[in-house]
Image 1 (cartoon, rainbow, N blue to C red):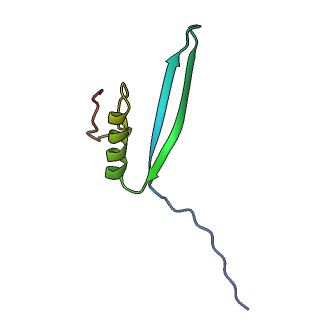
Image 2 (image 1 turned 90 degrees about the horizontal axis):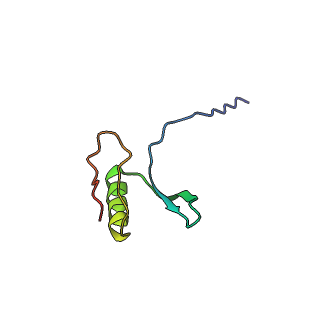
Image 3 (image 1 turned 45 degrees about the vertical axis):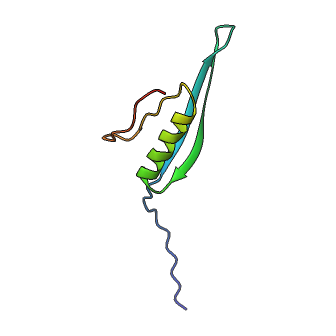
Length: 76
């Protein structure tokens, strides 16, 4: 009997949206955190969703973390 088993590591590209937030408390200390919002196969989809989320949350900023991306850096 001839049996062969092979394991390989293959590169996979995904685009995740993260939401970082920080707030200064009345005591002067800062509270901060980061959460993953979603994972996308396509950069354009991730950019569209991140931009829409930023526009829906007053005071938030959308910043593309992908070098060379011309993401929307505006503050709503």
